[in-house]
Image (cartoon, rainbow, N blue to C red; front, side, top):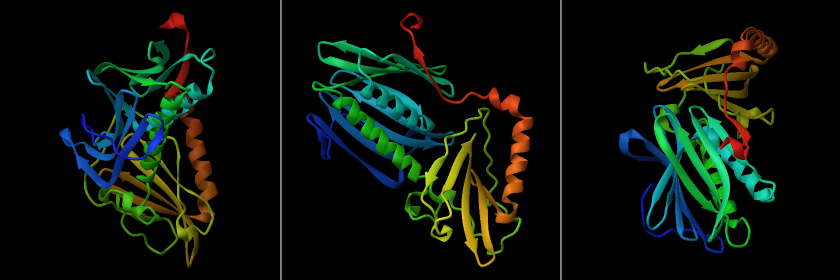
Length: 308
């Protein structure tokens, strides 16, 4: 959506709060080939906030823009940071202002600073982004005149964005298949339960220096699972790995699918080999333990006043 001016539609969240937005099955294409997946707006007091979930070859991100009559400011949040933003807004909503501390959130090559302040309009939360390739940018989220209704409304939009981002990871044969982009479709699997391999179609490969493993995302179970468990998806570098329990006339199996750009492949692991597979992965985790511990993902720390 990412526009300026104009009215904001949608139902009211509270006094002086209005939200709007939409979700398209494919999204629109913006500048630089970025695809817009979800867009929402929040109007609170004298400010408009635009939330745009986008995707490009490097991954997905959330663009949050604050617009007033005189200024506009934008921060860029990696998609795996949305859940951390939710946690931090929860912290400031639930914590007494006398006990709330400034926080620092590190995500990939970015650092986000969260600070509470107050002026003649009231209390506010200042969120600043600092990174090596962008000038420091800041948005100001008002708390509201009668509590934290501004922060709560902001958090509600973040939650909607996070839920939509999760749904976009669903495989085509899941109930929410309409939210999956066509390039992510996987080829059909054989009915045989064995150590099967299905070659991918296409030659595009992904590469990236960073090792950024996303949080596990719970997905709706497939009908064929019959209550056995939940599907899972993880992301490492520019690849996604889908884990799905399934069954057919030969028994139960775990399907592991790798998706990287246009390349996709799957293996089918019989249930009888699941324990051995787990032990083997654990074996290599132990071998590489020192290196794995050196890989830092997102982390949050309290910032003392003297450190700022």
